[in-house]
Length: 279
Image (tube, rainbow, N blue to C red; front, side, top):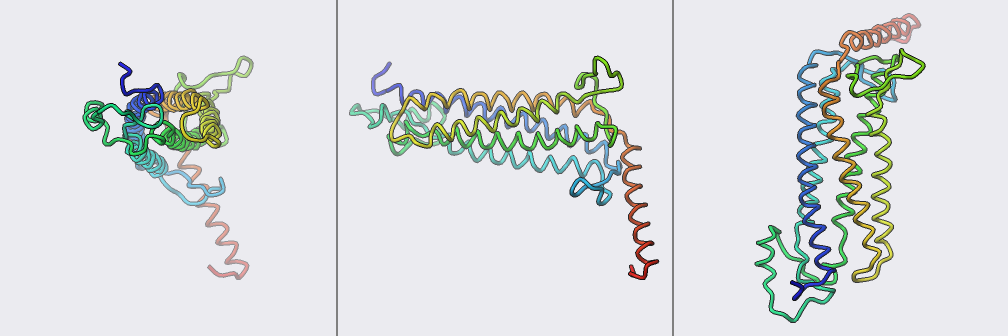
């Protein structure tokens, strides 16, 4: 079983095979999230709301337009995952401990059996490369950043100061002494989990930054960090999907906020004209 093999290249192979599968899984649930956002946008094509800059009411837009901005973000995330997949889909098996083997092996045949696109060209790099872990962790960190931004807006929209939406009771909690409260716990947890995933990325970068070629035991630290990143992002996406599906958009509140902005803008224009500043 271990002829022409080492634990070093076997570990590199196994983690690549596992991460390839998980990358496809993350891509698939991102597609589900995108479809849910599109469906919710279609329900709100005529839902007028304020658009914001600096968190100040700026111009009227639709809820659909706002939600589709996140669709664009998640589509870019899928592109990044696809691109990362290309670079991880290179088979290291045959590198052995660090310098290959004198046995006559057919790496191309094994590559086909294991469904890789190509084989590594340098045996030292084959066993010591963890760029694919770092790159995937970086892509996941960006996904979590997008989820956190969306979560922050959901938290704002749920507040009485905005009241643009209401979450289903399954995705919020009340207070033991303040019955009027409905806390958007899911989005707060996702916002918090984002920092955890950022930490996983920094763990990988820090573990790899001072390692000489080839394999070093420090590289065992890659598993916990990348596995945690993948598990966390999947949990967050799978949680936010039904939350969006079941949330209620309070269309009249959105419209009133937008109308107030238009009224205020017109009033400022009139005042400016009255002072002789022109239009």
